[in-house]
Amino acid sequence: MAAEVDAAFYRWLVASSGTTASPELEQQVLDRVRGLADDPENASGLVPRVPELVSQLLGALSDENISTAALSAEVGRDLVLVAEVIREANSAYYRPAKPIETLEGAVTMLGLNGLRMLLARIAIRPLVRVKVQGVARQVAPNVWRHSERCAFAASVMAPGLSAGVFESYLAGLMQNVGLQVAFQVADRICEGKVPRAGSFGLELFAASRRLSSVIAQHWDFPPEVVEAIACVGEADAPHLAQALAQGDRIAKLRLLLDAGVIEPEDSFVSAGLNGFQRRCLGKLAELAD
Image (tube, rainbow, N blue to C red):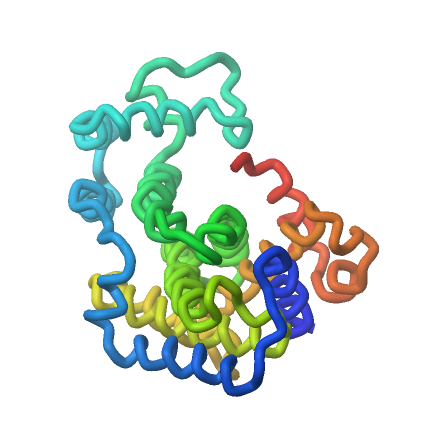
């Protein structure tokens, strides 16, 4: 069923830019994406780097004993980050009793993990919503929407699998970076289009996840995050990869539901998810873009 969900999601994702491509052309795209995974320096050069300040902040946040005052001081070094943190604290997800107007109040509301997740989202958003043309630009908004929802869902699944919550969130955000590179490749080879077949989509997802893993390793992401992205769908995958796989499927179903491609009673939902996963699916409807 996971493969069927992936195929349905891929067909929906490329609906406006998909074309019927020959097996030879499909293979050419896949070979090129797989080749990039063997050349991490060239592959990582196709997307922007994570901003240095955000990387430094994420490093500072690795200290579990850091105080609210110290956190506020770190974030306060960048006015754009200050605005993002206050906006997040006032979002529908946190639902403060009254508007939060100070940085320290916002940091208190988010907590250490909430702040980590926000900074990771700020860091990775430009990598997925990279300013390119063609197919990659057309699919970028929905790829990013999936990334955010996958990250959230994976972090919710993590405790039940004894996986790290933040690491699961980070893996969910990072796994689609390679997919955006793959769409750039397909756009060039297929001259402004991309193969629409669901079977091709399954292979492209697998190749692009490996590419995401290679880029994450090249950028010194935590080893467990790199491994999780690479191992999604494998037998005996580590717990973090299992959390990522579950989050990925829940996020895809959320977008398919929101687009009206499937209904809540669809077997993908009713038979494919357990009660806890369905509650997470409902919670994803509250996430704002």
